[in-house]
Length: 157
Image 1: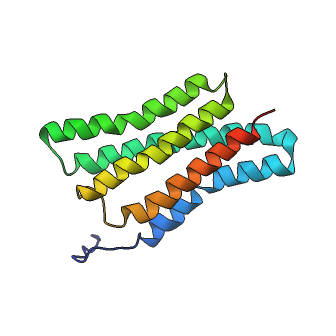
Image 2: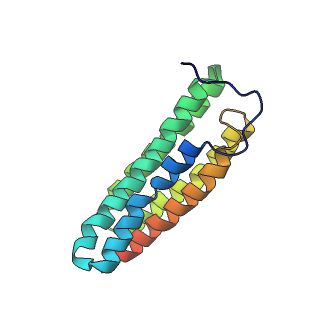
């Protein structure tokens, strides 16, 4: 069965996007809770939370790639695709400094998450994503960035 197409722009994110998006904040929330409750087990959880945040950052680039590939051609597509690979490079940079400083790695990922909002806003302005996009992206990126910084701080000896 085909999805219905609504000619009126939706100003609220779909329920599925809200539920799945906010559920995506659970891994770092659980990691922080475990670290606070049982510091002996919390270290590995914090490492996983940081890895998860880097994966989400890379995922954002994949979303951008898909969104623009469906709507843009020519030189503009080349520019958008180049922008779409940046989150994966930022995540890689965080991984490169991880063993030297967990806090620095967390700060790099958090900065990438916050910086991603600039691209998200540009995608909305260009009409490449739905009008409700920022209502979902803003709290999720800010929330994950804050949780990522917190995991980096909690990982300090």
